Length: 278
Length: 223
Image 1 (cartoon, rainbow over the protein chains, first blue to last red):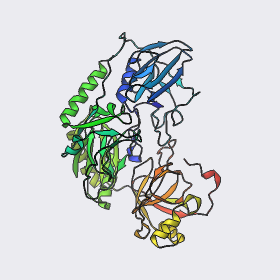
Image 2 (cartoon, rainbow over the protein chains, first blue to last red):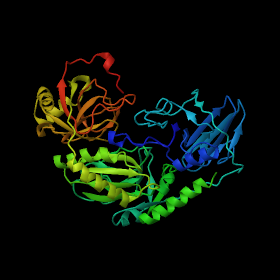
Image 3 (cartoon, rainbow over the protein chains, first blue to last red):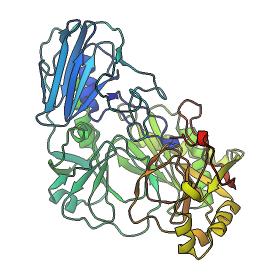
Image 4 (cartoon, one colour):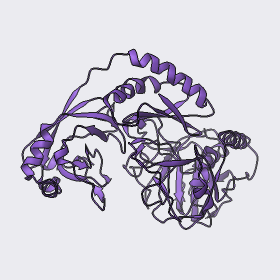
């Protein structure tokens, strides 16, 4: 489906920002093909598709290790009429097909991002299907002469900040459930004791680790509800959001409690890595 | 006002630990002042709190907290915006209100009494959340409060008027939902092509107005 970096600024209306599940890979792919970081691209989840280009194009496929007939994390020049095949992801979950000039769809509240749950934005508010035709914009070709770019390695350890002790969360191994999606990553494991007391609904941030009554944590993800009534015991750090987007059902994850300072050190390093690509 | 570092890119302001009109007024006045602040990416008002999302490359928690506290001082002396009253026409029961009968049974009323009680009350929009344009309404008479469904529906049609616990609301878009559906409104509570895209806003008063039993076909498409 078509994604960009989402539509911030509307949470007070109940509209979450949405956007790419692995924004780091989308941004990197855009930089590799010479686009602004936030240009619209195609997000592929677990499997890609076959894409035919009517005109010349410069493309890059970033994100997970997808079977593809072009090298990944590389700017590739495509001839008119050429087909590009992206098969399954061998590991990880999301890939980004970025095209110089960006994908053009009508903007909804300033963004090309698809919000699947509500059918907003992107290409007709849905995942792409066979015979769909997408327009691309025009842009300046990339000037970088690097051949293949290094990629971040998502780790099975999710680092979180937390206001209190989260020993039980960090001691356990959690399995990603099949019904995980862009709204939330649902985990299976030894049931956590949930904090007692009545909680009134409050705003919730991206990456929040919620504990519903059944003690099975849910990590709020890009299409999360803007407010929630379950206790929240920890929050994934910004620098590990890209790893959330690469989780597959049955993957095993662990949590590691880090300080806010450590979270910022990791974020700074990640931003420096991204901007070193071009 | 307490400030909690909720994540590495958000700050939670807490005014009270219960639902109260005083806390609501704080939220109502402070939210619009926070939205345009440099570095703020999203503001999530709720019953007695406001979550601020920010870009940590531009601003961090302590600076954001200082700004919020300064704006709060201004906010408490700002006038409360004039409240609008929005009427929402509802066809109670029938195909659009499949749970009206069970709500009646659970509360010991007739379906007509449930509809009359629901539409007889005045409601306050505490905030919009959960999904685009979804209003959290205060003021549901206790006599028609009913627990959520044991198993949520995978799809609740757009415009569904529902009760969940002591709360009532309207689903602006088709979505999964666990509340009991007692009627349907033909009004569009959310339209991304209009500005603002939501019919209701925080602080509005709402009245449900019962309308005739049949919904004309051309008003059913609001998903």
